[in-house]
Length: 396
Ligand SMILES: *Cc1c(COP(=O)(O)O)cnc(C)c1O
Image 1: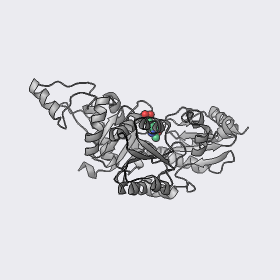
Image 2: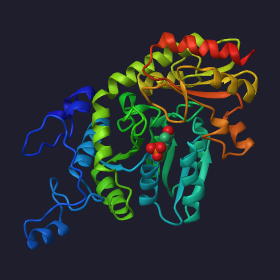
Image 3: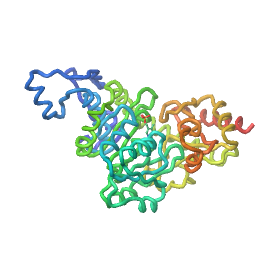
Image 4: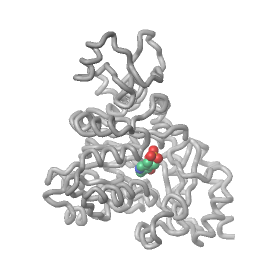
């Protein structure tokens, strides 16, 4: 029955597990362990752990399990494994399935830490990686080989907001039996239908829109029961990337309001992007919801026309103008999270993407004037007025 619920109903009631007190709000089981009634029960549980049985919080915990089941339901998947952060999820999904000698294909426009895992860690253990421009299907076609084990990409890239065609890449990957692993943070669980569109494994940093209020780190890997329990769980339960029960509870509460928040934030982002497009202080206004965005047709198909909650502004005048803009803002804070209720402005070239070489940044379109703006829950008119005033300051 719950499978036929709308996403908004699932996000409020999915996966709920009540104790003997029948509490309304999800309980926080802040416990690392669980008492066995006798030695025989302990022995039996280590042989086979039932769905409502727990051993140790690194393996699983009732509050964490509620979060996993709710997210899996929302994504239309069989199962999920919650992790301590989004990066623990990316690392867990990739490392658990790969071994020395394997080949993967990855989009090159990746969040800095994702790039580090693919480029520095996987290769150190003998995994061969081919990088492609994720928006160019010809490059995917040329790079995927009969022995390719997986493809990896961010469905909407950070910070230049390129959108990758999940269905088309999945078609190519599945021809050779490669798993399609999607970091879906920017698409958000609200607008995503990634599993239905061909993704085998979907990853979220719950730190972003799922919490949505900048409080806790968390992550989740979503996929088939076989992949989650057979491949991911053995790796994560022994290597210690588990989500804390308290953070799982924060995320459960976040999921209840996520659709309202993310829809409101995306609506404001669309308004602000439309109002700023063509502004004389801007060299580029990047937002997937704009008709002028290079992949807007794909956004209509893949995300129901929703461009997400983040936009990027390329300010004329380079770093100096970008810094003047940041320092003149009075509502968005200068920080580096996204999906938060508070609008957040980031200068990727000197912060999140500082580690890249100048050439790499140029290739990815991360110019010295580029500002990433995560649109929060403030009034869109207030935000726009503040941004326009700061833009004027940036050109003074
Ligand atoms: C933030 C982010 C991550 C990492 O998540 P953490 O919770 O900070 O570890 C991974 N991928 C993308 C696209 C992100 O934006």
